[in-house]
Length: 234
Image 1 (cartoon, rainbow, N blue to C red):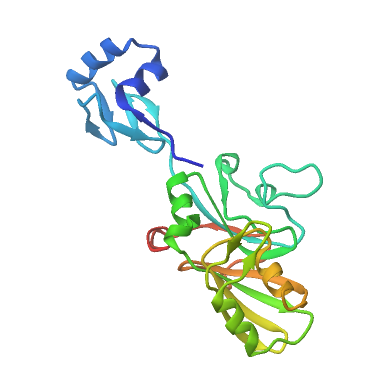
Image 2 (cartoon, rainbow, N blue to C red):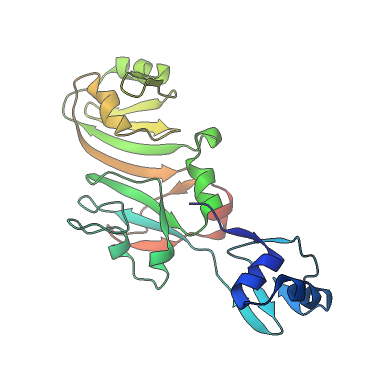
């Protein structure tokens, strides 16, 4: 979801119904404030979080939101669903319906889920070009060994999409548990990669996205706002 950007004179004209020619006069007279500063440039580009006022009347005052949720198994990563409870249903906040999901988790996957109304921030996190690490704890039905590490690091070819996955890091925790680090999010990627070994995934839990870690602060189903450092340093 992209952030909404517009030229200042067009935004004011659409918002108020004032002809753009007259809007330019208002700008020239210093009657428009953007983020608390007098704005005279008709070509100024604002976004959905720019605070805009005209003669003291607030035209836009949206605030960005960045939320961490501990997603339970059995809850769907969607805003609306006819069959299952959604992650939006778990949130107790007035702006929840303005949020979108940053990197979905499958119905049976638990762990860290991020939500925001800032399209540029979510695009940065999910874009393959930025190679943001996502770390998962994976529980397997059958024992694993060192050969998994080599195969994940080499990448795997998926004929259906005609793609080869980016190299992934696999760390063995014990005979049936591994930590997997991905920089992309192909459809059911982890399950399909372990499927090459005919080893079913029986538990999947996301621990972190970039520098944002789920940690131990939240109980299952709980959420909180991200800190400024989490937002900036991801």
